[in-house]
Length: 289
Image 1 (cartoon, rainbow, N blue to C red):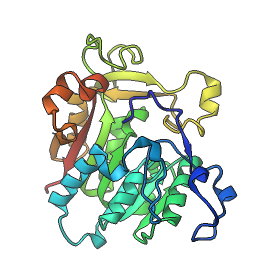
Image 2: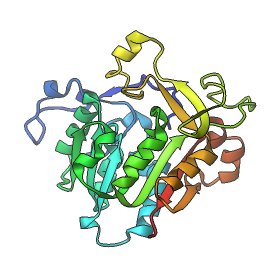
Image 3: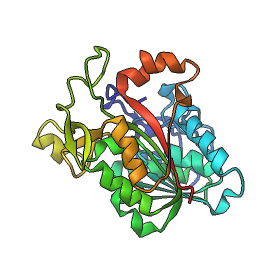
Image 4: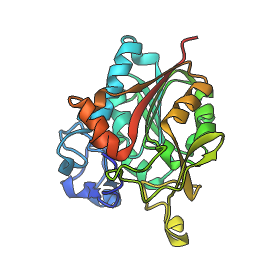
């Protein structure tokens, strides 16, 4: 899970390839393809980042999202469109495609899309495609039944505007996995107590600012900083209460926070564990009308 501590860890795919791949790619063609977070099972049985120890389809965030999808879209998924916004290296998109959805993964970084395309070439999923673009340009690709957004919102400086844009092109369901800020940072276990600004307001939301880049050099090297923002140098983390309000005001009249990814010790995780330390959760918005 991303708490910012392992941002620089990478695993080169070229290290797990021998000989020519089934689509004619040679190992030297893949030398620049790296995976920082998504351990994806390829069709040949190999994995993109095996040092993680488990595949992305076993990640609690994916399992949790799958539960929601199984309830709302239990059957006939071949015509159900899902957008994975800020898809990183394509792991979640791949697994959603394996569930039968028509999946479009969108990410702005060349390095991420290179990893996505490598996965696409090594999985037989005609219902999966990746696009290099800014997620705010979702309108270019039509309307979607589902928008999945994991690890993106807390890299934006106008999260409320983004939710409204996404909602305009979402027919039914939003699954949002993100950090949020707290009213008080007094908990000594809180991982971001020295990283966030004083409590303030942005877009009518109460929250805190987070600096994405240390200096101009880091900003100019943002293509390589794959777990950072793109255009904005600081991002805004709404407080949880205001984030829920923003989801509702974006047009999702049924709004919930989902806790089962914290199982089996949900109370302990919320009081003292990952949820408490990282202020990160899963939020679900549904359009019922």
